[in-house]
Length: 504
Image (tube, rainbow, N blue to C red):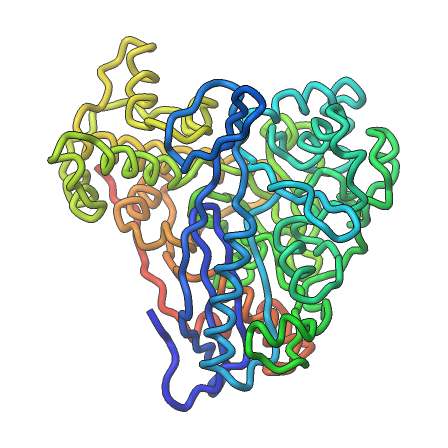
């Protein structure tokens, strides 16, 4: 949906890359309100490469392949789509002055002399388990948490790089760039690492927010591999002359560092009702947590697997990754590929309506179970979880959908309760932003299971946060505007929907 009008002057472009799709959105400030215009949307389809008799074969996401496959991002196609979107943005907005890029976390590219060394691995690639073993042979989980403040996820960048190092592939590289930083490099010719995303690597100090050179030395990673750090709002550089020609844009368009981890940008746009609020950034993953001024580094926080990631303006995103709408989207993908006509023709909205009428007598399952991480036949894996416990599994697609949403809502409730205890605060309101804020059944179940008011919206939180940070950086709003000031703009610009807990 476009939020602009004929009088809006669009001068900002947000490139927002998710694990399943990407977008380019124009933005402008009109009488104190953020206006947006969607320019492009494109798929982000991982690529499975299988080595057979020394030859690499390509498979589209979801196709079967034998053991030994690798899952990668098709980064060249993704960048081509980004350029197409920015070309259209420059055509529609001749006064374009700034571009900001955000994406998912942890994944990276290896470069040598500015050239890409192969396609970047996907965080769901199964090689990461070996990296965990390699890292923990050198440093205990407790000591690692004390240094980087991160929850344990097998795919954190530090574990992926440990595998690259063991295979010798890291020795070929002279630079490591996270995904949004790679695209900014291709646009500007300048390499950097933005702090909010760098904080997800496991190699950034949780206390100083600088690269932890001691950890780099411990793991045998060359310090020169990691580029200089920048913070959200910093100017990375102007686009190159060649980029300007390709995009049909002015040469003085700058790329501005935003919260380049998409969740960091999304949190900027959360219209917090009060400091006693939690947030759920709901998309492929659900990021459930609190915005704090200082990290929580207690043993209890580590054992509960909470993380302390960098936020915009030196805030801390104290949160936990909870499996999200990935479970639903993979189920839909499976049904739509099914030979059963009724399942193949099922659409999400009709299934959600059916799911709302399901008499829920199932136990909730654990969305964090490792079997749900790789792509594949999610409904069968969910059924397997139940049958292993002697329980009747959901059978119809509507029952599967209801089980997914009930299980996610319960995981949200438990995570928010734990965050309250660990941070020593009380939460009375839960903000749901991102795509999941449009799922009214999920929002109502979240209100019911948390026992708290849920405020849903804005949907486009990541792009909104991206654009607001750019607007402040280039002076469309006061350069000394606080996060509260930016959130007030979001509050004026986009509606929220309230869900109150219902008692059974």
